[in-house]
Image (cartoon, rainbow, N blue to C red; front, side, top):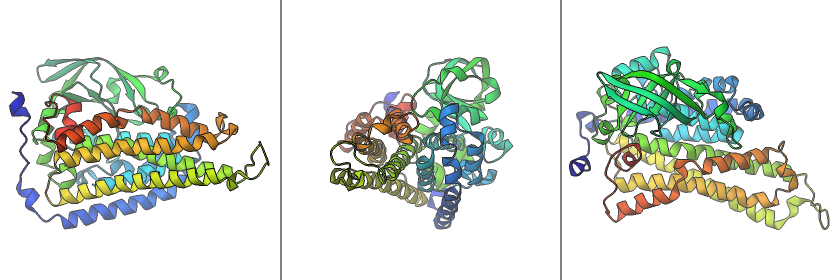
Length: 416
């Protein structure tokens, strides 16, 4: 069975032989319009960053700002009023938001990426999901820690799933079950608002959700074997380049955008504070004249900027490849996966090297640099930042060493 499951044939269809140049241009154009709208709401989003931190959830007004840009319809199919924009443009927008409010950027990515997954599921699931409009949002928790039982017509589920980012702003929740995921309406879950007691990315409201003896009909189940085999039900109505791309690739690359934006925003804050700061020891000279500061800031901006440019370029190239009707090889997918995790490390490391010269005032709870530092530490512990695992998958692919057999959500990343 394993030998059969791990033999992948590139998906071929008449649609992939078509000329998709107009589709590509439309998607890129939508991306540019979206980025311009993002620029117009950044000050508004930044003004509520402290509120997100205090409340343990991103404010409703900030979510409305993001809705106004088209962010939550960027991966929604055109047939439901979506934009089907290129992932690189979406990623750039989240980076910009990350400079204004890291928690807002985090839920922007996490709540929106699931539209991509829904587009791979049955038309019936899509009709239900987008019945309320193209900005419909789903949070998620993929760790298979609940109890799932196969029953006639679907699944019966019970249990508590943790770390469901932005669940307060979701209409649906996607819950992991190992080799499958279940899409559950928010009315079927209980949110534990007391479960979110953290020091980093507090505004994400990544709370636990509990389901008690609920039935999930089959059309609301994403069986990952369908994606593994290249038999996504959603392709019956969404057989277009965007959805030929790797869902797991997009999923694992999404947190990178928040980290890049947060680190860049942190350095800008550091520069603003350093412009008027004097050293407290020695001469009392302006800290801005310190050559060690110059080197660290220049190095940090260069490293994070290079990471940002590489990340965006990777996803532009992958979208171009999809618009040619082609599928990225495992080596290419794993390279992009590794580089996404490496961008997180680079951004985190660059900011932490600046931290020792931020001064004692940076430790004050009221100092935004303190929040930046804590948010970056929290993001650094996310599974997408697992550089060691990603490196192993990447280099093994280069050596043609057999990967782990497909079995669940985690192993699917190598294949699709």
